[in-house]
Each structure stands twice: as structure tokens, then as C-alpha cells.
Length: 262
Ligand SMILES: NC(=O)c1ccc[n+]([C@@H]2O[C@H](COP(=O)([O-])OP(=O)(O)OC[C@H]3O[C@@H](n4cnc5c(N)ncnc54)[C@H](O)[C@@H]3O)[C@@H](O)[C@H]2O)c1
Image (cartoon, rainbow, N blue to C red; front, side, top):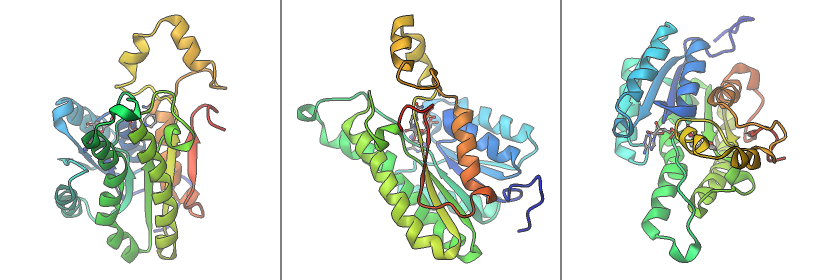
């Protein structure tokens, strides 16, 4: 695919964004659509029934093709069927943003419930493997592909409010990213991670609003930019890594945290 000065190599490509109905994922879907991608979103409607409709309206308003499917990304069969439906509807998948994920309130190790651990690892780590596995053959065959995995500051260093399982999973995402990058690099497929700090997504806003001015100040004081990030600021990092501008970048992690982790 040729690249014009305005086109960042995304025009006409099919992008799948997991957990794209809300928050950072929705921002990723929107910036990819703005850059000319056809966008498919996988999410769980149950969490917020209006969310899939809202992202659909946002993407379609940009004139981009859009596909939505209820897919639990921890379920290998649902992921396989979802990717097949995207291919059928939009074409071969060139860009995958493994964004779906969720942290839980931290608990001490002695109280760690095994099923909670397994669920956190399944959503925040295993799902990236399942989704990548379901698209990699097409990317290798096309000799072009972009996989961007959502990690977290909790996986880079240490999260202030992260659970053990979440921190372990998000650190695991970085190992998965590096190792897969070396496996698929010979096929011109790049694999990178983005590690956000605190970002004002829908699930963070109520917690932020419940904080006193002092508590907000304590939260932003260690951040050199002195504020919480916006979903669009993470999405633009994802867009860069998905674009032709990042053609020689693979296996790396881009920190989007206002300088909190350096
Ligand atoms: N917001 C932050 O401060 C922050 C910081 C660091 C990392 N992250 C990471 O960024 C990603 C997005 O976070 P967010 O804050 O936008 O979250 P969010 O809760 O606003 O959005 C996550 C979306 O994922 C979907 N989802 C959850 N489980 C799913 C499943 N099994 N299958 C399919 N979809 C599923 C949800 O329905 C939701 O729409 C996550 O991986 C999160 O861990 C967020």
C-alpha cells in the first residue's frame, strides 16, 4: 500500500479494537477511523448497553466503515468467530489493538482468591494472545501487520492502586510483546505496547470526582505534567504505533503517563 504525505499508511486498513465501546478503546477506534481505517470493535454489551451504539455513531460520523460484535475476549471460540465475522464484513485484519482490560481493587496476598487471579490474567494477558493468534496468519501472509497491546504503568514499575494479578498480567503483556515481536518481525508485522498512567476514562471519572481537592493534589503531585491523562492521548500513541510512521519500531513500550514513570 502506497503512502501519501497525508496518509499515515492506515487508510483503508481494517483495525480491530478490543474493549472499544468505552474509554481508551473508544478513543482508539475514533482516531483510527479519523486516519482512514475501517474499524471493528469487540466488547461486552452487558457492562453498558448504550456504549456500543455511541462508539458506532462516533465512527460512522467520520464516514468510516464500522463493525461491532459482542465478544468476550477471554473466550477463544468467541474470538475466532469474531475475527472471522470481521473478515467477512470488512476484509483481512491489518491492525489489532488489544485494549480490553480491567483492574480490581488490590487485596493482600493472603486474601488472594485463585479465581480472581485467573480472571485478571485471562482478561489482561491471555486475551492479547488469543486475539493475536486469531489474526497473525493473515498479517504474515499480507506481510504487513500492527499489533498494539495495552499494558499499564502497573506493569512497568509498580501501580499505586493495582492488584497483584493486574500488575503481573500487565508486566506479562510486555514480555509477550517483546517475544511476539521477534517471532513475527521477519513478516513485517510489528508488535508494541502502550503503558498508560492514570487516564480519565469512564471508570476513572467517578473515582476522581469522589476525591477531595487534597486527594486530587496528592494524586497529581508525582506526575511531572501535574494532571491525569485523557483517553485521546493514549489513542494517539496507539495510532502512531499502528501507522507507517512507526515502521521500524517493534517490541517496544511507549509510556503515556505524563512522566510519572521514567
Ligand atoms: N484508565 C486508566 O487509568 C488506565 C491506566 C493504565 C492502563 N489502562 C488499560 O487501558 C485499557 C482500557 O482501560 P479503560 O480505562 O479505557 O477501561 P474501560 O473500563 O473504560 O473500558 C474497557 C472496555 O473493555 C471492555 N471489556 C471488559 N472485559 C471485556 C471482555 N472480557 N471482552 C471484551 N471487552 C471487555 C469493557 O466492557 C469496556 O468497554 C485496559 O487494558 C486498562 O487496563 C487504563
